[in-house]
Amino acid sequence: MMHRLPYILLVLLTLGACSNMQIEDFAGTGPELKPEEYFAGQTKAWGMFEDRFGNLKREFVVDIQGDWDGTTLTLIEDFDYSDGEQEQRIWRITRKGDGLYEGRADDVVGTAQGIARGKALNWSYDLMLKVGESEIKVRFNDWMFLQPGGVMINKAEVSKFGITIGTVTLFFAKDAANHPGSFSGRKSAA
Image (cartoon, rainbow, N blue to C red):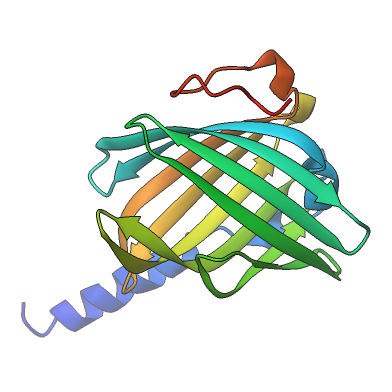
C-alpha cells in the first residue's frame, strides 16, 4: 500500500487540476461583462464569508460608486459589516486590452490581475486582511458572472499558503436606489 500512495496522490492532484474553471470556457457567453460599464454609477452588493468548513462567519453590504474616465475605473466601496464594523476600499482598475485588467487598492499587495471573457471575469490578487488588531496576507481568486437583468454573482476563494481558508459570496445589483438595506442603517449614496 505504501508504494501506491504516491500514485494515488498524483492521480488526485491531476484530477483536481482538471476540474478548475477556465476563463476561456466563457468566451461568447452572455450577457457580456465589461467591468468599466457594469460598475459605472451606483451598484450595491450583499455578501458573506464562510470558513473552509462552510460556517457563516460574517455578512456585509457594500455600496459602490464607480467612475469610468475612459482609461481608469475608480470604485469606491463602502462596506457595512453585520458586526458593526465599517470599511472603505478604493480600487483603480485599468483596462489593458483584450479583456485584460489590472487593479490597485491600498490593501492589495502589488497589482490585481483580471481577465474577462463573455459573461465572466476572473480576478486574482493578494490582500492584507484585517484580523482583529493585526493583518494577514491572503490570496483572493474571484469569479464574477453577469446575469440577465443586471445582477452579478461573485464567488471568491480565499487562501493562505495555497490552502483554502474560506469563501466569499456576493450578489451585485445595479438598481441600488431600490435596495436601501444596510446593517448600520447608513443611507446608500444613491
